[in-house]
Amino acid sequence: MEKKNIALVCGGYSKESVISIMGAESIEKHIPADQYRVFKIIIEPNRWYYKAPDGSTEDIDKNNFSLAGSVHFDLAFINIHGKPGENGMLQGYFDMLHIPYTTCDACTSAVTFHKDFCKSILAQYGIRVPQSVRILRHENYDISRIAEKIGFPCFVKPNSEGSSIGISKVQQKNGLRDAIENAFIEDNEVLVERFVKGKEYSCGLMRFKGSIVVFPLAAIVPKNEFFDYEAKYKGASEEIVPAPVPEKLAKEISSISSRIYQILNCKGVVRCDFIVEDGTEEAYFLEVNTTPGQSPESIVPKQVRHMGWSLEEFYQNVIAEALNR
Ligand SMILES: Nc1ncnc2c1ncn2[C@@H]1O[C@H](COP(=O)(O)OP(=O)(O)O)[C@@H](O)[C@H]1O
Ligand SMILES: [Mg+2]
Image 1 (cartoon, protein in one colour):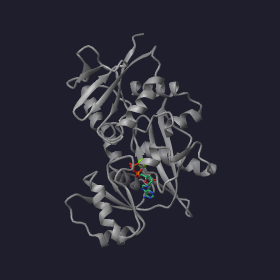
Image 2 (cartoon, helix red, strand yellow; image 1 turned 30 degrees about the vertical axis):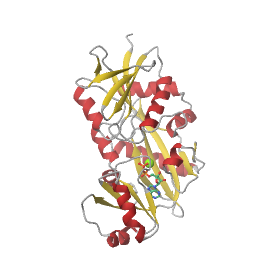
Image 3 (cartoon, rainbow, N blue to C red; image 1 turned 45 degrees about the horizontal axis):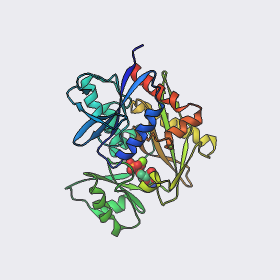
Image 4 (tube, protein in one colour; image 1 turned 60 degrees about the vertical axis):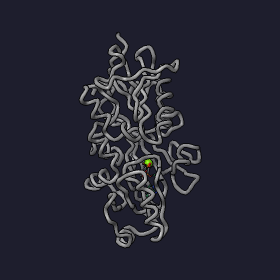
């Protein structure tokens, strides 16, 4: 059988581009070379190019996403965190070129990347989400009104960014304006969200052979005050798989995640994040990550290994699903 060409698309425009490339290295290592030819394609704001194992590079022809007219791709394995691989932009581009890809489609990616739209849709289906107020750049906002509606402490975050950049926890009204302005450095829309005090959990899942496979739950135990950039990527947090929780709670979060996957009509591997509030034990949905981290020690690779899949099996399944869609 002719080997398929896979474009392993990584990099991207966000501060997580380095993380994306690290994840891609692990993915590449675990895709069987006897079945697929993998080309690492790096997307930078001003250049899209193939980076060969020997370090040489070659520009992508954006007209048809090919290499010098000779290499055409059977599949795009998108591993970009943030723009343009997690917000629907590349998905729309690949749709127009009829190149299949591993992630959610353009619409679902755009919706999940917009935290406020995503929460609004899920809330309509009865998923519990923390209350928030969205502020647009150049719009006058009323600190007192927001403070009254959301209360303290609260979380201020860019609406469409990742890796906890521009996020702050605000304790009182006089810190709110600075936090909002700080988040506006990262995005044109900012959310002020109710702070949910509790423990954080993350649930990876994918569609596989016609049903949704939910991976074992992960508990996220930050060493800092919340799951911030340092905690996420510099080892200042611990992700425990399986989460040390009563089976009832693990089952509940699995079933909410599975519902979310169906409601949003997700494709490929996604990770849903929740906080379970102390006292009430209610799970609040935070966000869906549609291109979850793939470094060997990232949450999803840990979860699939715990489930008994090797990473080779996992990536083969992801590829097979995407090609059969
Ligand atoms: N409403 C909230 N209450 C408590 N903690 C929160 C809340 N929102 C976010 N956090 C904390 O901040 C982290 C990052 O927030 P998140 O919305 O997931 O943004 P990002 O896209 O940057 O990952 C979460 O993993 C969680 O630890
Ligand atoms: Mg997050």
